[in-house]
Length: 212
Image (tube, rainbow, N blue to C red; front, side, top):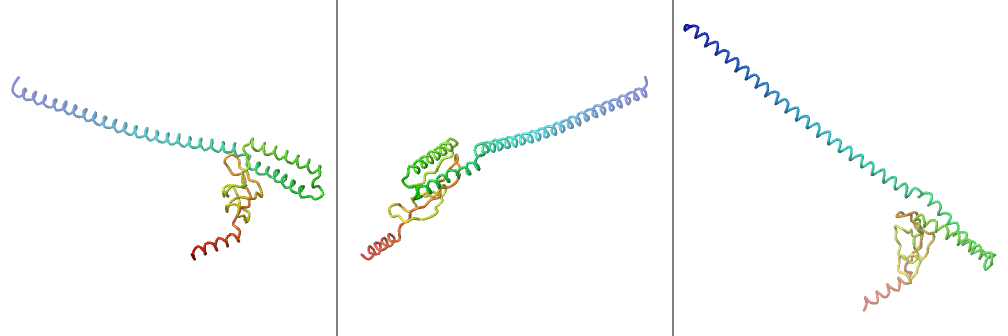
């Protein structure tokens, strides 16, 4: 082999080496791009999964809130569904009380055996109604002798009375009732107030003390 052949062979080998190096470099670049591409797609997939998990959690939370609201409304409907009916039924007690007072004030019936029996029957019916109401947690409001409570009582008049503290209920015009923890209707009442003479006396006494 002469020198020219050797030189040509050397150049050929060099070119082949360059081609191999270029091929390796291209392959490595392709692998790097593929890795970067896979990493980007994996990151996007994770973001999508996290977003879906967040939406799912919000949906479950909303469903739970709706379930609780429904349970609360159902419970209230069960407990207070008869509210309007109970309020109307109180008219029975009112009518019995009115009838009793009318009969007691009837001069033609006073002190008669007939009146006594009628009043006894009215009291029995009234007690039975109160008992039925009580079993359904409808209870009368205690008023007489109590301090006026705006949440339970409605003052219809003021009555002069120096024996009671001002604002004390001394007359019950119409009995009030509660159903469970709700007010069915307030008691209509009359409350005590100091008499004018008492106020004048107190004022005079205060003036005397000031002059001393």
